[in-house]
Length: 213
Length: 281
Image 1 (cartoon, rainbow over the protein chains, first blue to last red):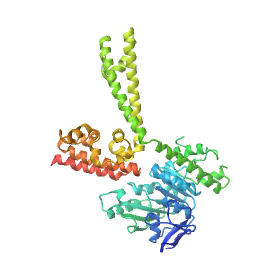
Image 2: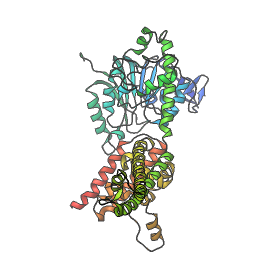
Image 3: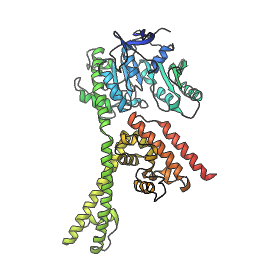
């Protein structure tokens, strides 16, 4: 699967790694204008590294739920268009604001992803993609509630963290349950375990269900 | 500025260069559903074109979020520590003075109640003599102190979940604040082993034990938690140990990460359920 425009494989320390163009934010290695996007630190990076068809070609408008300190979202803003970043915890959000300050297309919001009405007056409708990486129970519900921001043929790129749903249950059982719930509002197109980079995480690519599908 | 009317974007009542007005709407506004805000902003003349809109949006969201973060973080653990200590002082002093009022008022009036409620009743009286004026005035001080204690409690209940979300959810805001105050701060609490958390507030008993004069205390201030107090006495040590273990983890998450972790709370609920089930076997 080809990488989005603005994401390339470059050689760092003799290995081919993902990179985007932008100001470094967390001391990552650089190669001219390119900076390393470490798939071990970023689940979206791992999705691209593993060749999932994310539907991202570069320049998309994006809503990023669970932006944390902005590591991944900084790379997203490097190759995407308007990027709304939602994070609920103040401490990581402080770093997120610093990351956003130098990126004109990145809009940080201190909001709870479970309550979209608190940011629907800021985040626009008909977005191309929602990227979701929230460590909370009810990850499928978060995706369903945020469906309203996505255009009918847009993409949901979600990372399901088994331990956030249920620490005791077997990850496979948890994934089945979350995918079942997700299926009510989205059509799941592809899933992959990210275990090579992140334990007990399932990457999901999905698109909204509409009247005719 | 809450509850913006449905269908209105953040920019609708905000002049383009007023970052603080924008901040208020971004932080507190809400609508049911998103719309094509960039196009609407251009249509209504808020922005010259989409690029101009995104530029303004960037400055507004960065400013709003930076301020919102600062505000949430200012509600810090030290404020909580002072408030819970002041609340205890105000409650204790109100009760002490209420006893004095009850004793004195009993000598002057026919039906004088006891405690803070008794003092409130005395404060409502019309004094006739010089001694009556003094005791009514003293009762008014008691009423004020009790009201202040209640206001401090309300503040603690509001502030604790922002400072320590997991600890507050697990222990309740007041006990969470007490644990933070006993340890000296959230960071200090986060660095304590769970065995220490278990006996925080029982220092006297602990030192008696270490001196060889007493058995080891099973619990300190966490005794007031339902999971300890309402577990049968022979299982209370286990319950206190389980609770203290999870409280110590909650304090670490709150200090080092700051996000709410529902898993942790369920693990504790399960563990306590298992401990209490011993009573049925």
